[in-house]
Image 1: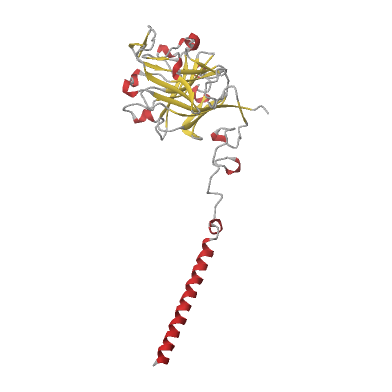
Image 2: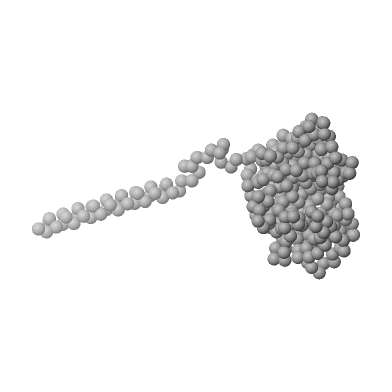
Length: 340
């Protein structure tokens, strides 16, 4: 009896030792497997992961030296430093920019669209951005002038905005702006004026329209002539020369986006976040009926660049509750094509 029990005990001990050895072997195998670098067992497809969108080296960040739509620089673009600004210095570079109203100077005698008026205090550079601020300021020293807008006479009152204008001009090139529009019933505009009484509105945004989702997702593009000799002279009701509603897939006031404008002697092309917009090609040949109507192409002069916010009474006037609101510009980059 004792021998039988002893034998059973010995068998159990052997079984337990065998089990322990098996467990140890499995544990060591598991540890060895977990130490294997993850990169060895994963496969990467360079054609599909981290697309470079034309960036050299496949970097996910775009190269700021070239337009977002042409990262390979097939257009042979060279940055025009005099027209470009990253707004990173904490103050506005007054060698490049004029704040409308500074030292009593109002370019084009434009003090703002009533009831809003430009204030030199409403254009600030902070946190790496140029901010055009719209405020409710009934105690501001408003002009006694009035302005007729859409047949209604408006006083300048309650609302202050701002305008910033380039001191330098350029003709033909690629303009790129990264910005977010104000979330209030005021415009956020990027436009130009030229020596031939012409105006090119790259966009008028209205990201804070109270009722129209369409306007909140729109870049209003205009070519305008202020020359009384031009058949399309705007104040006589025959203009603008050309207008186009560029609809985008985002509310312009919700986040920053990149808008590009290629301007040549023969066409203007509009890009959104690096892609040519389906409605973004304006051809001189089409606009002028192959030269039969030359007055319609007035964008053949050097331009000054403007950033501003205005009230558009026909789209609604902001109340005290709507303000303040900020039109923010992260950068403006202007390239021109090298002759080499």
